[in-house]
Image (cartoon, rainbow, N blue to C red; front, side, top):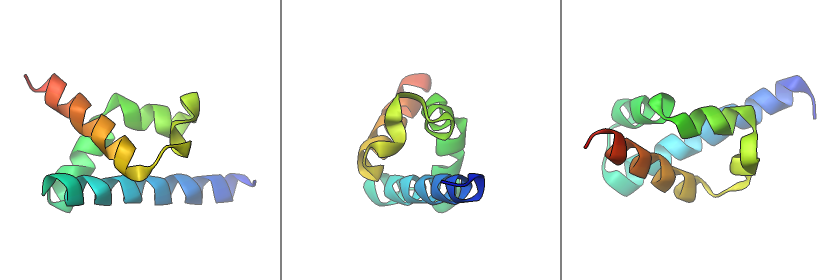
Length: 73
């Protein structure tokens, strides 16, 4: 896999997770993107740690939402 194709995959994965956040939690695209990019999990996904990129978009959206909820208690 080339570096360009890795970047394209990561961008697509991020977009799909953001869309899942919108669908699951009724968020706007801006709200979902902010939550995604402020999460520790998004960094792990982009770094390829723990094979998180292999998990489903909905599962990762749920993990990121739970992380967001915990950080705002």
